[in-house]
Amino acid sequence: MRIGLVGRGKWGRKIQKKIMELGHSVKIVKKEENLIKGISNCNIVFIATPDETHYKILRKIAILDKRIFCEKPISRKLKDLKIITNFKKNKLYISDISNFYPNINFKRKNLFLRTKFESNKKNYSRKRYDFLYRFAFHDLGYIYKKLGPVKFKKIKIIESKKNLAFTLVEKKMIFEFFYDTSSKKKIYSLNGISFYNNKDILKKMIKNFINKKVDFKANTSKVIYVSKLINKVKKEIKKSRN
Image 1 (cartoon, helix red, strand yellow):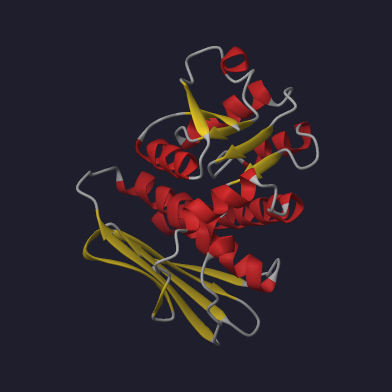
Image 2 (image 1 turned 45 degrees about the horizontal axis):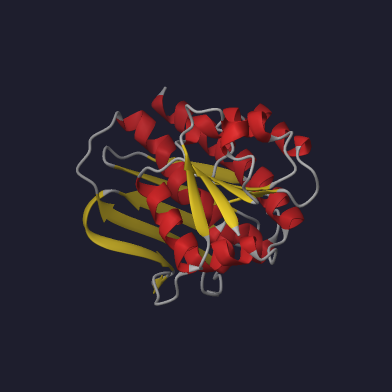
């Protein structure tokens, strides 16, 4: 199967490697090129460009009758989610590795913890929003997978200079989130149980997508839910700075 890949940065190269390990050829298409022409002879297209380009690219290629895998998020603007309706049934899938995480049961109080070290320094307010789309997107997706569209009655932002921490309060459960990229320890866990294991969940997700073994409808519902919830958290972050 011939697969087109738009974007070949750090994450794009990871996706390319997994696709080739699965025995498929990959055609690299630069986003500056004529996308329609570049992917015309590809069966499937993967989009792995920076967040802010996803919506623009999807608008260009929605007219094509091809299966599209796009890295999350579609856009950081809720109004852009309507692009989903431009695609035919079972043609657009947004990256969802949380669907392949190990099964960990929730408790009355739950903690999602993710820490790692990154040397690059960004504007802090910008970085907090990056945390939401890079890390929280998956964790909120995991909650949706296990509990469905939970309605949280309270969102609390915990102030800090180096990380992002917030709490979501549901009727019976509390979910705490802590993300830090200035830590020397690499941790990703829920309630002390690590999400890291020997299973290659990225490769598994890509394989399932290529083989049409993913639930497109559930994926769409999850993306809309998570995007709206992230937007609510963003609003609370803005309030906390005032």
